[in-house]
Length: 252
Image (cartoon, rainbow, N blue to C red):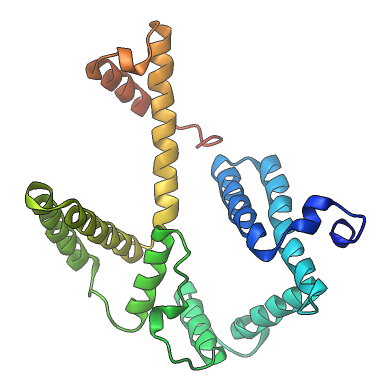
C-alpha cells in the first residue's frame, strides 16, 4: 500500500482520501457478512482479505500525515483485549458470558473520559437505522430505562400496532411514518430481550424470501410464465411448495 500511494505508484490509490475510502469499508463489510451467510468459506477467505485492505489503506494515509500507522492500531486492540479480559489475563473472575459483558462495559466506562454529551451521543448517527436502534436501546436499558420483561414489550408492540392502524386510517403520511418507526423500534427491543440480533434475523429472512421467490419464478418458468402473467393463486401454490422444501444451508 505504501508503494501504491508513493510517487510513481497507482494514480487511483494516490487520489483517495479518508472520505472516499469510507464507502468501500462498508461495502466490504457487507460482502464478508454475505459470504458468512452463504457458508462460502473460499469466498469468505477472499472477502476477509478485501476487508483487511481497508484498515491498511486508512492507516497508510494516516501515517503519511504523521498521525499513526497500522502497528499503532494493532497494539491498541491488543492492549484493549488484555485490559478488558482480566478473567483471562489477570486475576479477575467471570463465570458466564453475561459476567464478561458486564465487566467489559464497566472497564470501558472507566476508560472513556467524562464528556458533556448525553449517554446516546456515542452512538453514531451514520449507522444503519436497525443497528443504531439496537445500540441506543441497549445503552438506555443499561442506564435502567427499560421494560421489566419481554411480556411488557409485546404489550407495547400491540399498542404500537393499534396506533399505526389508526394513523393508516386517519393520519397523514408523516404520522404513518412516525408510527411505523415506533413499531420497528419496539421490535428491535423484543429482539434484545430474546437475545436475537435483529440485523442478522432480518438478513436471514431476506435470504429465505429470495430462495422461496426464486422457486416461484422457476416453477412459473416451467409453465412458460413470468410472475406478472400468473395469478396470485398460482404463485401462492408454488410458494407453499417452496416452504416444504428443506433449506439449502450452503446457500441460505
